[in-house]
Image (spheres, rainbow, N blue to C red):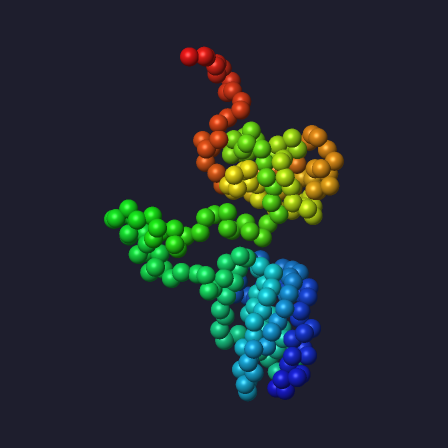
Length: 224
């Protein structure tokens, strides 16, 4: 196969593509649309090609290779796949399992927190790519108990949030409180003074970190 012809065909698969999961897959085989952001040919030797693919999650690279082979008319098969990045996590910042195991051992046996902190990132790191919303202290406890977030509880909101977007809710101290679905856009939140702005999807902070600002039914308050 001529490299120039190969790269010409590969460029056709950059952008939004149709995919049907392969027979040997764990999901239903229905036609879906996925986005391939970039394909870079790193090495080309005989019948072997090494490529770097940046794509939307859920893209089947094995199927992508097969489809490229179909368009070329010669067939193609994925020999090896290596995931080098997912979201904010990269291969060069990963740790090996034995490093994690050793760190846990040092913590349990010697009480050394530094070893664990050197291999485990705070969970705030996993939402680095999401739009962010800072919420008032008075709203944190309610969200921690699963309540949705209303406009009055919002302190700061990222630009460009649209309805249906997944966002990260943070306390004013920078603690991840929850993941939530936007019920309003950024513009709507800024323009309104009431209404539900975010639907809580997954709570990330313990319930007792911030004090409740409401009373349970039958609960009384006494002065000492």
